[in-house]
Image 1 (cartoon, rainbow, N blue to C red):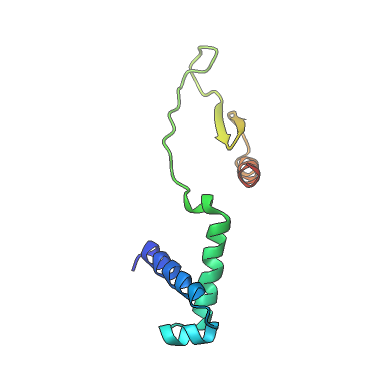
Image 2 (tube, rainbow, N blue to C red):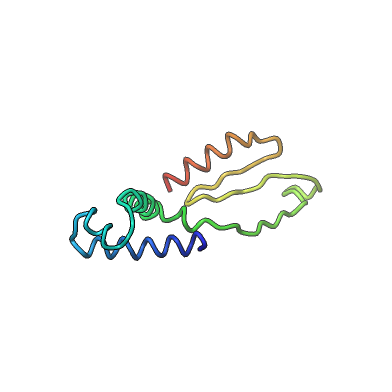
Length: 109
């Protein structure tokens, strides 16, 4: 079973559990799962519900023009947009600092 199929299965199970109004132990016994499994998936899917953008992350193509804005060839800067913020990245940047800035902006924007 793929991760996506497993997530869908547990999403359906959790909807069923919530709609049942039963206690965890009763519901789990009827459905052949352990309370520990149910609690794990309740937490896991709640995190996804709170941060849906993390489940929608995807790679996007980046096209780099090797000509800088002043017309000379060679590396120039790169503009990165995160939410409503734009970051200019120049040659020699600190990758760790850049990652921290992107994470911070993602949580704020």
